[in-house]
Amino acid sequence: MDENLYRRLAERLDAIPNGFPSTESGVELRLLEKIFTPEEANLGAVMRLTREPAVDIASRASVGPKGAHRTLKAMARKGLILASKGEGELVFRLMPFVVGIYEEQLPRLDEELALLFEQFYQETGGGGSLIQSIPAGHRVVPVEQSIPFEPEIFPYERASELLEGAKAWGVRDCICRVQQRLVGKGCDHPVEVCLLFAPIEGVFDHSDVTRAVTKEEALSILQETEDAGLVHSTANYREGHYYICNCCTCCCGFLRSVAEFGVPTAIAHSDFRATVDDDECVGCGDCVERCQFDALSVIDEVCIVDYSRCVGCGQCSTVCATEALQMERRPDSEIMPFPVNNDEWMAQRAKERGISLNSIR
Image (cartoon, rainbow, N blue to C red; front, side):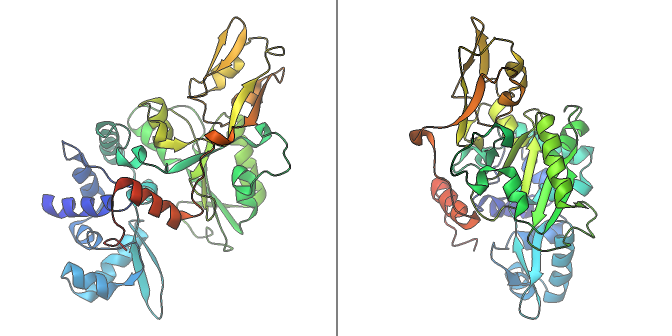
């Protein structure tokens, strides 16, 4: 392995606001070597978040433009970068490692890659800068049936509303659950649960990874994940969503960071929280079993909520037979405003991490 080459790529990925932390063992370099060929790493190490033609990337990488163009197209097919149509030619841009490059390796995820990622995850304490900086990368979306009726529930607070605005829908395997099973861990929750959606019709029709579904099928999958006790989450901004993760604290990288490593910034909670009517609660404990974040306990036959651990997913309220446990909107002092879109998210994240976007854009 050309360690310097992959270190330059790692530094480039860490210059993206999402982050890509280093480790003492250097496992992040072996992880990149598993995913990128040397030719791909050389180009990736000089790429930007803005779209540009192959000739500009090739010039900075000191390689021929024709060879660079072929390599860049291959990289796009492997999910390492994004490609789109520019003015008469293809243009390319870099993606963050998470959410981005890693998730697109689902077709190539084998035991070796799964073990490398697990070592990286453990050595960085659940992801390091990926999950320890704010704004958080992901945000919890509450289970819909748990949300109380209010005059105004924002579209980004309802998972079904995110799906309603699309023109194409798809579902793929949860890479977190696949990865955990490959390392001998995981759970028995369903695997094909990651929902994707897009504003253009038919975009998933010819995908080898994402199974195209109808809107009705997507809504049905959403309901099935709620019934299975899975937590909805998506990107931590208001506009421009294209996926909904449905995962658990034993597999999801973001949720594991909260439950396993106790990192509160790993995922942004919803604007709701659980509340208990003491007079109606019978202390059955069903909600305690349902909660994946150890936010609930039964003391003197009454459920108690630990608000420091409640992420507002709403799963607990769906199993309360007496309806003593409900979801309420958090006090204004606890509701953190979050970015409008990905551009604003990156600007806020870059400021928090003390990095400049000038070199990567």
